[in-house]
Length: 267
Image (cartoon, rainbow, N blue to C red; front, side, top):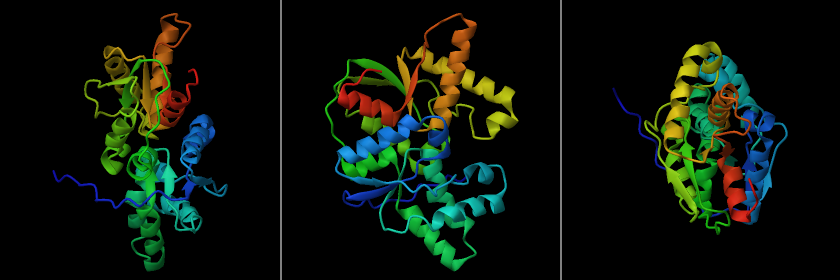
């Protein structure tokens, strides 16, 4: 089987302005992660521009085998980000869709293809941007803790942002990051997969939760809200069945975790 290599990237100097592509899941389920992304970037002296016309990146349709529908959704995004600023995405999954798949969706249209390539080349996953462009360095103001990191399949294989997530967490002197068994395996979310095959998804996420619990981590951190909701949701269900009142495996988006650790805010 051929292994697709991630294309090399040229990272720019820290810009004065960026666009935020917030993602559907953050918008609908974890808006705090979006707000904390803005706070992290603004603290670094970067003006964050959020365009309310943005919609889904098109990945659900694309991964479900509906390229025409995905193309229609992606087309909405191509005309939005007109300034030559980086587009920061607090999700490796959505970032991977824009960077890796938009150019292929518009390969037959020279004009749209050029726009897709331009957008793809200036799209960055949040931790990638903080590590390679911002050179993030902030004092860890939190108490000592142990966390497990989960990286989505798309983030790991399309954006390589598992490496930058680890690098970002390693800047926090009081945080011990532990690695769960079979760390590269899916959590069972997979977008529409979890809805189409719920029994399989439940089995996969149960294995993932068990692996994370086995590390002794106090919480799980992820840069992808879909995975985070799936993992913490399964853990919460297990807590409910066990009669536990407090969550035994809480979770946070990495933007919220980093912001909280570097401001000293309580969990």
